Amino acid sequence: MHRRWTDGDEHRAGHGPREPARGRIQQPTQSALQNYIQSLIPSKIPQPDAETLLMFYFPSTTTITLDGLTSCTGFGGYHNAMVVNGVTFAYAIMPECPVGTTGPTLLQYTTLAASHEIAEAATDPFSATLVGGQLSYYIDYNDSASWAWADIVGGEVGDMCFDDLGLGQDETMENGFMVQRIWSNAQGAAGHEPCLPRWRRPITTSRRRSG
Figure 1 (cartoon, rainbow, N blue to C red):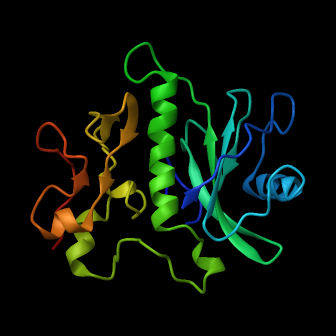
Figure 2 (cartoon, helix red, strand yellow):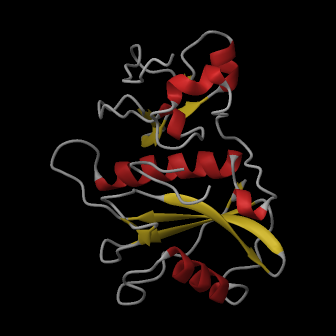
């Protein structure tokens, strides 16, 4: 759920307003953001349903805090879920983070982060606390076959393909937009490199061997 990045709890993808606008909530916490989202329903956002994903994009002037972490230094986006009027739905928070003179542009970084959160919210949309303690898709760390992945941050389909070496191995271009490669059980079960789309050369990781 986090793209170092980092996510919170852990589709019909909806489009949330680019709010809070400049000068509004400047340092929101997760609870403040949920209160804000609830205040928008249904006056500015129609009542979401269980297949809704609301995406909120924040300007660089807004600093978001989550579990003691700060946006852009501790995480680059997160998704979570909440209940309004008895309906559980997913949402994602996307801060605008500064980019360097080399590497992805601001637009590329934004679409890269958004693709990570959209894929994870589609496959693991609801917080375990909201659905009886059971996540949808999350790696099973009780299975010894999964222990080699114990060093990654999170166990969702975006996290599993995150390039912790910073070599850009988790990035790909789709129709001119930069997106993150996403884990495929089917590819892995077939003995192929499990992150799709396939990268231009074998991926390198720094996972520890277990046992």
